[in-house]
Every structure is written in C-alpha cells, then in structure tokens.
Amino acid sequence: MLTISQLASYAGVTVRAVRHYHAKGLLPEPERDHSGYRCYGAAAAVELIRIRTLASAGVPLARVRELLGAGEEEFNAAIVDIDRRLRAEIRERQRHRERIAQLAAGDSLALPPEAVAYLDRMRELGLPEQMIEGERDAWILVAAQLPEHMPLYMTLKRQQLDDPATLQLYHDLIGAAAWEADDPRVEAIADRLVALIEADTEGWEDYDEVMPDELAQLLDAVFLDSMPIARTLLELLEERGWRGWTKLERIPPI
Image 1: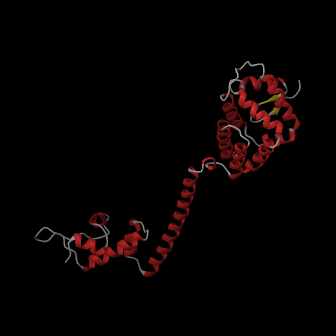
Image 2: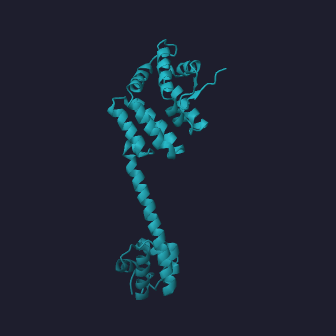
Image 3: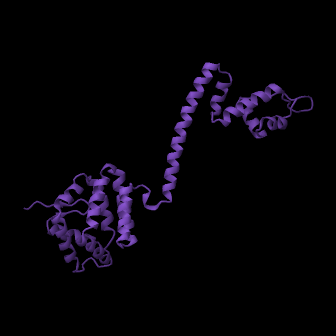
C-alpha cells in the first residue's frame, strides 16, 4: 500500500496534483486507515498514471473523466477532436507570438509593410522623428479602417516624397510648426500647397475618394492640434478653393 506522497512520486506528479484530482472527482479518495492515513493500492497508481498522461497531453480535465471510461472507438474519436482543438490553439498562440514580436518592431505594430517602408523613407530623407511619429499614428488609424486601400495610399505618399517640391514643403511645414497663428508667412505655404494639389488633382482624388468623412474629420482634428498655424492654413486653403486637409475637396464656384 502507498501513502499519498509515495503514490505521487510513483506516478510522477505532486501531492497537490493528487489532491486536485480528488477534488475534481477523477481519482477516488480512499478512506483513512486506523492510523489516520489514506492508503492507495496499485489500481490507484495505474489510474493516476492514466490521468497524468492525458493531462500532460493537453486533454482538459473536464474531458479526462469521459476518456477514462470511454470505449476504444469513442476514445479515438475524442482524441481526434482534442487534437484538432490543440492545433487550433497552437495556431492562435503562434499568431500571438507574431504580435508580441511586433511590439519590439516599432513601426510595424498595427501597420502593413508598405506603410513601414514609407516611414523608413521619411527617415532616410532626414525628416524629424516627431513628424514621422505623427504620420505613423495617423496611418495606424487609416489602416485599421481601410486596410485594403493602404497599398494605394502608400504608393501616392511615396510618390510625394520623390517630388522635390513636396519634400521641400514638408520641411517648411516642420519649420512652421512654431509659428504663431497669424504669421504672414502662412500665406506662401498655402499658395505652394494649392499649387501642388492642382498639379496632381487626379492623384489627390484617388487618395480621397474612399476616405470616410468621419475618419477624415478625426485626422483633421489631429492636424489642427499639431501646430498653431493649422487652422489658419485651412482657412487660407478655403479662400483658394479647397476644403479639408486629410480629405481635400474642391469648393464649387458660386
């Protein structure tokens, strides 16, 4: 006869595990002998080993009791079902591992590869990290709502970075971030921006036509909070026939 400690050691589990299996009703708990100890026989050891084997294979304890009393055909069918569940869990955990790896990957968290490449290009061109972080956060919002359109958006944005006039405007906007709202130099910024828009109206229309108004308004609000001249710049754009920032729209002539 075996004590609970001897039984646990024989089966390769802990005493705590044995007591847990008792509590779950998987392993019958013997009566105490005249000395007050619970003694286990060979049958208990065999049953405990079977329980441990099923549990270590990933079988939920809720199904262990079912399998212990199952016939061969029923047992095999249950094992196939459990294996299917385990494979699904493995796939899910692998996806979790991939997401965890992205936490250390900076820009690639919540952004597709083409957006990461765009941000990397901005760094190569010497644009400041503060501006890149603002772009990153904006594109995270867009990617969450319009993932299928990100390749188009990023193609257009990369084309803008390849245009010297657009790139210079980016640098000028960075310098303008510290200007007061009524700085007279904003007029020149507005004129150059309108010239770029009207030189590539088709490209801007491709960019804007699928952008939901609610998302555009959210992104516009981010821009308005980013620098004192933002609201003035939008007002000047309207005077020149264009409304919006994220989603530019030509104002119909009166």
